[in-house]
Image 1 (cartoon, rainbow, N blue to C red):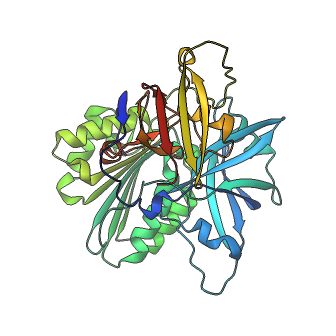
Image 2: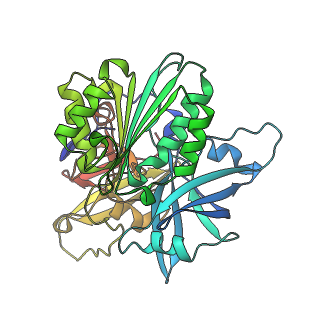
Length: 387
C-alpha cells in the first residue's frame, strides 16, 4: 500500500490492465460463527464455517482481510478484520473455515459486542476476502521475511508467518511485535507453538512498552532511536528480502521513513493500517437535492448495471455516499480510506481524494480511486466497480 493525500484522479486515456485476483468483486454471504476463542482480556478470535458451495468465494491469500456486517441496536455496522489463519485448501469438498481476531476498541460498538455478545451459532454477513497485504516474492526459498506489528496488527502476520515457514524449508520469518505488556500479547501461545515447530527459522522479538525486558532495546516504546538500534543489532536490512508493517499510522510511518533512510526500497515494503487515529467515517448520510441548485451527475456501474444519481455541489458529497442512494449494494467497509473495499475506476470526469491509505501509485495512475474518499471536480463523473 501507499500513503498519500490529497490526490486527484481523472479518466485515463488507455484501458486498464487486468485486475489481479486479489481484487475480486466484494460480495457478502451469510456465514455461521463456529467458535469464539479468547486471546487476551480484550481480544477474541472468531471462526466462521465456510460451506463447500462457497469455498471459491472465500479463497484468499495470507494477509488479506474480510469485512463483517451485522445489525446492532437497529443500526447496520460494518468492520474490516484481517484473516489470522493461513488459507485452508480442501480437495474433499468439505466445509472450510475463516478466522479473524477482534480487539476491543474504546467505545467500539462491534468490537465490544464481539467480546461479550457474540456466540457460536450466530449468523453474520462476511464479505469475500480483499486486500494486497501479501507477499510479492516469486518464491520463498532462502528468503528472509520480517514483520513489524503493534497490538492487533499481529493478525495478518500470523497467516503470513505460517505460510512463509510452511511453504519452504529454507525460508525464514522474523517478527518484531510491540505491546504494552505480556498480558496484551495476542496469539501468545500460537506464536510459541509456531516457534516450537520452526525453532531455527522463526525469530520472535517482543517489545513491551510498560514491562521491563532483560534486553533494554526490547523495553519501552518504539521511537526512532530504538528502531535504528533494532535495525543495527537485530534486523540488519541487508539480510531482509521483504518487510511487512502493520499497526497504527504513527508506527507504520516511522518504520517506512527509517527503512527508506537506511536504503530499503519501496518495492520491498508492504504495509497495512488498523487505524489512522481518526474516528471512522460514516457512509450514506442523508443528502437531498433541492430544486434549482447546481448538481453533479454521478454514474456508477456495478455488476454490469449502470445507475445515475444527482449530487448537490454544495454538499461536497463523496461518490460512495451518492452511489448508495441508487445502489445500496455498492461495496464499502471502513469508509475511512483504509481498507480499499470501495475501490472503483474513474472512466469519465475527475475527482479528488481526501485520504488514501489503500491504493498503490500505479493504481492511481490507471484511474482507480477510493469512492468513500472521492469528491467530484467535474460536472459529470462515471465510475466502474467492475473493472
